[in-house]
Length: 198
Image 1 (cartoon, rainbow, N blue to C red):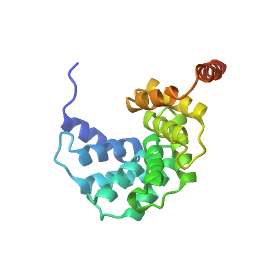
Image 2: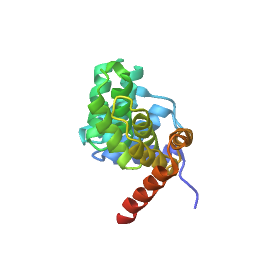
Image 3: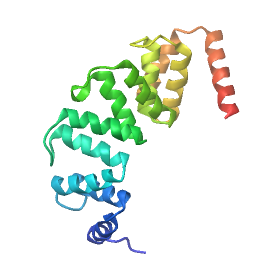
């Protein structure tokens, strides 16, 4: 079966977007990225706002990034921060990671906030986000802004690797190089038993 052309897809999404947050979100992405159409940030923003009105976390994250860059809307760090946190609270995985990074590094004019950083990194990491898992593992291995915890670092870095993180491989190698064999074996056994229990 032949796949529909972009004009048909857009027409279908335009029709579905009336009252459908997911369709409005995808339409916003098409215009924001210029996927088969001319870039149109103004239309992208209108579609994303329609999705946000229905509580769509992904649309909040994308509109936050448009505010960060000033594409289709005024560049506005406070609106970027507000939308990223709202998207994270709405359960958007990428918004949770982005909010963690924002509070980690002070992006978008945010004050570094260890508690908020850990909250959002943890939320994303627990759902399998490899970058969040890597960030937590690296922080815990170094004892940077958190208490050093080699076992938790080992777990998060291992999970990050399982989810495809290349940087986690180097970090885990550095961590395990400083552990004795008995400690490392204990970490592995406890991690295996925790996962066997789930």
